[in-house]
Length: 234
Image 1: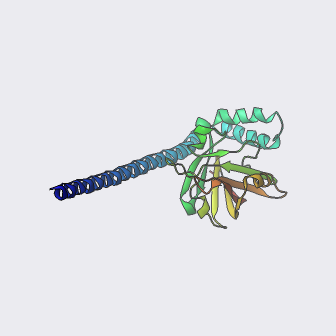
Image 2 (image 1 turned 135 degrees about the horizontal axis):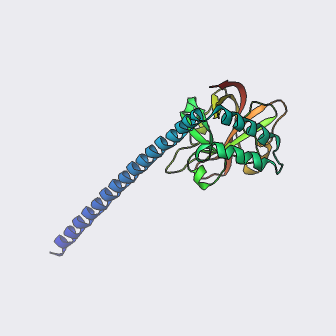
Image 3 (image 1 turned 90 degrees about the vertical axis):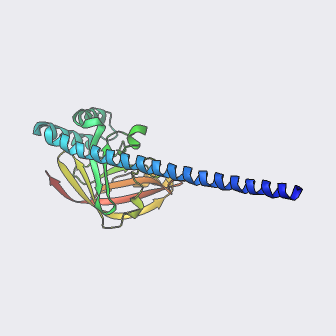
């Protein structure tokens, strides 16, 4: 009798474990599906934001575009100068929702908006221009730095940056001009080494994309360097 009870208890215990195991797997699958759906929705949203920038620039007057490009030029010329804030304000007044341009890397399927200023909201929706560095203008001795998150559960921004190869094309659209860059270097550095990559270099027109790596650990920084090779006006 006692032996029969023990067998029955063991059977019930085994059944309970199986039920818990099945519930855990089902819950895990549901969480993965929800995360996939959220990522898909957000990826669609940021693409729409990038597309909307192009539509907005197409609709504004040529005078406004020229005013914006002149402000970009003066912005670059006044880095480190209190007057820069004036030109940043002019640019901000001419762009939609703080989006200063779009970033496209065809080889890794990246197409995202670029925000003029950096904040938690902006970093959660695209790349951000780093204050104190140049905006694209086509002039040498300039260095534009774009920062972006990797490893967000709800959004893919710079997650594919490690897949960029030397020679890959990078496009930055600013107002009506597309600045075309060629990737010349990818490097992983310590955070304290990053400052050396933020400065302009004589004779070069540089774009650098920076993100934390490895995702979720963030103990290093991945720096992708590209040099301007062409400009195209729409």
